[in-house]
Image (cartoon, rainbow, N blue to C red; front, side, top):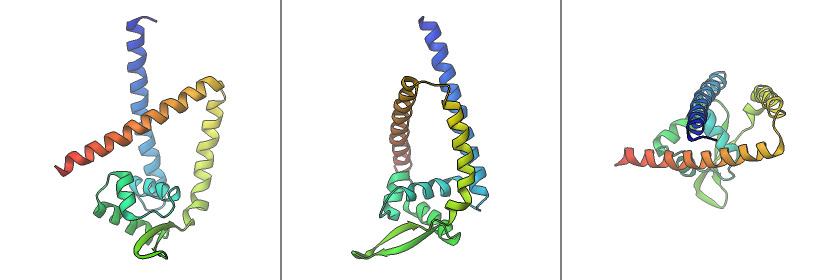
Length: 157
């Protein structure tokens, strides 16, 4: 492949990824809006689902958000009945964020539709291509996580 063709493909891929990120934010905002939340709230709820014994401090660490911003997110989620704050029985000073599961039944049909659409699309790709996609997204996610932390740290200085 020529250098020029490679540069064209890289530019096209970066543009497609940029549009995908924008579409993802807009999609998640539309989903969140159905529940009276914003996209940050719904993504924090998603993190709470996958993290046992999640604390507000840990959520701040995962999101690179300030603790006051995380508190506001948790307040909204709690008011809507999506999470509960519970004292840790092992350490009563510690408060753990627990998803209530109230959103699961209401949101499941939306994500089932998305999953079916993605499954249909991915049928066009062989195992080797799928493995490459997994590697690409894993590396992109790690880079985004690192950059988010770096950008958040710049705000503090």
